[in-house]
Each structure stands twice: as C-alpha cells, then as structure tokens.
Length: 483
Ligand code: ADP
Ligand code: GLC
Figure 1: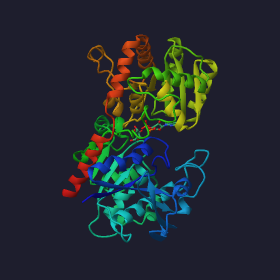
Figure 2: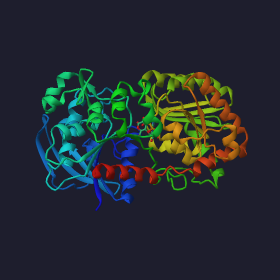
Figure 3: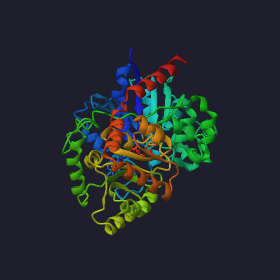
Figure 4: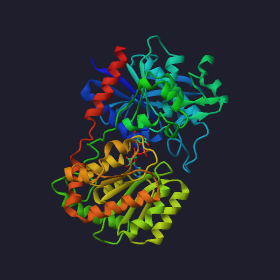
C-alpha cells in the first residue's frame, strides 16, 4: 500500500516561491510517486494560493479558534498532486510576501501565523480531521518546525504519525520571546531544554529538530558542516546530540521545469549536441541587460542579494571581472545596500555590467540558457539549486566549496580536465582574492573553446534528477515506520 506523507511548508512552486525551498517542496510529490509514496502538500492560504484553487468544494474541516482566529481546510491540486490549504484570513489574507509586508518587513505576528499553521498540520496528519490521516509528517524549515512538537506534546489522537524535520536554511530559526509560549497551547512541560525552549525563548526550528523522529538537510557536506559552530548557528550542540538521526539528501531538479531542450520560455532550445544554438540566447541576455555585444564570457548571477550568498565579495570583484574581459548580468533582490552596490557597478561599467533588481522567473531561465557561467560565492549553501540549473543548461558554475556546492560541482583541476569529468570551478574561501582567481581561471578556460564545451557537456550529462534522492526519502520514511 502506498505510504502517505503530509509535506508541510510555507512555499511550493509554482504557487509561492521566494527561493529554493519552493522549488524543492513543489518537486517532492512527483519525485516520490515512483517510490510508492503519496505526498500531500500543506500550504498556508495566501491570496495567490487561494486564487489558484479551482472550485475547492466544501471545507474538509473548520477550526472555530485556531490559536486566536478561525480557519478552515480546503483541498486542491498542485501539479497533479494533492494539495491542502489552511484558509485563515486573519493570518494569511494580506498583500505582500509570505513572511512580510510589501516593503519587506516581517509581519509582527509571524510567530502566531506559523504556530497556527503547524498546529493545523499536526491535526491534519495526526487524525483530528475526519477522513484524513498520514503516515509521516514532513516539516520544512522553521515555519513548520512546531508541527513535530505539537504531535509530540499535544497529539490530536493516539498513535501519532512519524515526523521528519528538514533543514533548508538554518540561518532562519523562528526564535521568539518567552512571552509567546502561553499562546501556543502547548503543555507547560514542553517549555524545556529538550522541548521548544531555545536560549530562554521559544525556537521553532529548534522545537522541530528536538521533536522529529528524523532530521535531514539538503546535502551530505552541509549535514557535516552543521555539526560545527561556524555553520550550526547555535543549533550545533543539539544536532550533534541527535547526530544518529541526521542525514543529508541532496536536492534534485525538476526536469519538467528545467530542461534546455524543452524550455519554451527560451528564444532557442538546445541540448548537449547543439550547444551552438545557445548563441541566440546569449544575444537575448545582452539585450535584456544592455550589455555590449561581444565574444567574451558573460557571467550571470541569479540570487538573493545577501551576506549568505557572498554578494558583498562579488560586488568587490566586479572590476577584476571586467578587467579580464568578462561581462556580468545580475538578477537578484535583497538587502538595500547590496542592491545599491550593484546599481552603482552598472553605472560605472555601462555595457559591461547589467543589473535587474527584482524577481523574474522567466529571466532566470534565460540567464542560465544564454550566459557562459554562473557565479555562486556563497558563505554557506545547504544545497543550492542555481548551480544545478547551470549544469543542466551548460552555464558553467563557479562556486564556493561549501555545502551542496561542494557536493555537486567537479572542480576543473588538471586531473579532472584531463579525465574529462570537470563540470565547473570551485574556490576555497569567500574572499576577493579567491573569487577573482576563480573568475580568472574561468576566463582562461573559456578562451579554449573546445575545452569549455567539454566542461559544459560533462555538466549537462550529470544526473541531477530526483531519481536517487526520491528513493532516499522513501527509504527514510519506510525505516521510520518500521522502527
Ligand atoms: P536559496 O533558496 O538559498 O535562495 P537556491 O539556489 O536553493 O538558494 O534557490 C534559489 C531559487 O530561487 C532558484 O530557483 C533561483 O533560480 C531562484 N531565484 C533566486 N533569485 C531570483 C530572482 N531574482 N529571480 C528569479 N529567480 C530567482
Ligand atoms: C535553502 C538553501 C539552499 C537550498 C534550498 C532548498 O534556501 O539556502 O541552499 O538549495 O533551501 O533546499
């Protein structure tokens, strides 16, 4: 019999996405179906999610008072798989993003919004909703972190489902003042070191990590890195204590969305045997970013503009990149001072540096299909998806050797080049010197067209589909149920 999983998250592509979390949650149902796992995705009822529900019928359940506001459960579809939505206008019927107002400020009541969401998820998976029952509740990131804690400390029925807590980004922890505890409707004993207590307050991700039957993160290297204070960000002690339950499962890419041979958003489609067709896409990138036409390499960036992503170091390295004959096409949004730094660079190097501030899904595809290389100088990167899209699109990744970037790119050293297995360039520390060195290496390699094509082809031949990782999640669920 198929195993049933409730995948609980604050984002799922194509309905709501601010980063890789959305991509992964959106891809999981199709990734797991071949392994006998039925995934139902559970999302907050943001306006865009509700608008996408077609005739969802009568609510499956009503909560007259879900931690302070009424809510109901609606049913729909997400790319052919089952979707459940928590319709709670008091929490989610707002203009802006999933976490903040249109100006980007976090909502003051995020603690209550995502506590309510987690409580509802625990009810749905745990048997409080007639006709609804799931073998496993799979929680993603802090927004869902309280769900395993509710199942542990306040289960709606006996025989609670097994729980998995996945860390996509440990930097966001959902840490709040102790004063909110009384409003969470948890028993007093849940406020404990091995419960939801976190440095004197309440920690949502911490609660999930402490309560879940298994912990996963999105690459093997990152699973090791978070055992250390540099990467664990305060949670390393807990993770070390529970190390036996921690595993790293690398993200795949959704080839239905990311495949250069089938990507209808591109001026020219291509595969590894028709790389010459990328030229038309490169021209389109030049136009979209007002770059001077030329034969030199175009480096692109598709990123949140934050410290995590090393965007300050990238801004410093722009003169070196231009000096080397490279051009830069950057698409991103994030911290105001970084946005300003890139605006300044575009003004200083017209025709060499083009910047588009904002979020644009179609443009992100064009950049991968038309640029020669993608720069990813992250200080930490649990998995990273843009290097995987780069590999699939023949846009050679130039990446910091950390987390999932270390696990998915094969560095073009002499041996890897000679063996024909190199797929990109890695550098060790996120400093100006090493990034500038990596850019220099990329421009040198690019100058040898045959060699560059070999790197592109090796990347395009690599398998980053969900096949292997889907099987690993399925295995993990089965192990938990057998335990
Ligand atoms: P993270 O989740 O830490 O931001 P990932 O590399 O895992 O990093 O995922 C980022 C996702 O968001 C990718 O799908 C990437 O293409 C997309 N993305 C990031 N910034 C933008 C942007 N400005 N416009 C369009 N897509 C973007
Ligand atoms: C996070 C991480 C990123 C990862 C994504 C999906 O946002 O920063 O590295 O790829 O989640 O797991």
